[in-house]
Image (cartoon, rainbow, N blue to C red; front, side, top):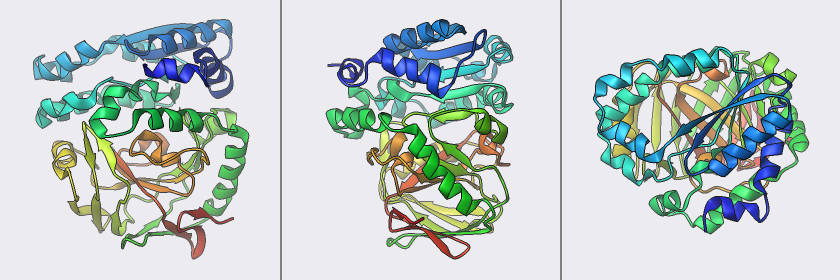
Length: 373
């Protein structure tokens, strides 16, 4: 049974589409909306496009084929990666909102793509990334296309459990998430010093820089837009901010394994000195991280973001929704201009601490994975 068939039992495709268009993106008449789809989630792309039209918006679907994606990564001349996709970039100038559905279907082929080609491919996406960072388009990621039997097999996930946890974490009260996020924001707004520790020896010190604090409650409203929060994702439920990139000192040892390019990375450790990653190790599959990291340029070795999870129905699994699990803290390195940071790079990597303690100017905001308000 495929993912979409399972979700239909509790979260009908049309119901999800209605929520995305009317509640999350709040599409208005005459707004231009792009749906970035894959050929294995056509039911979702079709339902979302129809809801856009019912709301009076104008929909355009851009379809990616799994077979073409892998052929592009493995077979076309590398010079193609540097060619600018002028048509889509021009279209984005006239686009008010976009929905991305996630792919490819089967990540087991990533290890067959040479690291150098993957690095050049990612670098070649910079013009597109820059266009999104201009902040004209509201973007919602609904990575339904990532929750597949093929990906579950590759990473060793129980597919039925993954489907269940994804469905549960989508079915939340966005207003309650917003309220909790606002309470945490009030503790961070005028703070300066942040310390993140864990029982495994993690001890990372950071400073804040009076930057916007983004409450990812699944809804992009006027308040979000004023703060520059134009990127949302479902399942929702997180508070995110870009700290001072020049302030990181200490070490973080991630205790939640994380999927990356067809492998599961376990025990990734990052050592920071004078704001840069000076050393990194992992208990398993370090070469997967290293293969991409070493091929990238720019501010790849600086801290990018801190994320506090808010979603009470989400569960840790080792994938995209780990960052929203209530009481967790995720830390990233690399790109962060989309949330108000200064790091200029195409590289980005984020992992999660299961039961961290986070203090803000000496006040304990999270204690061993429990939010303290």
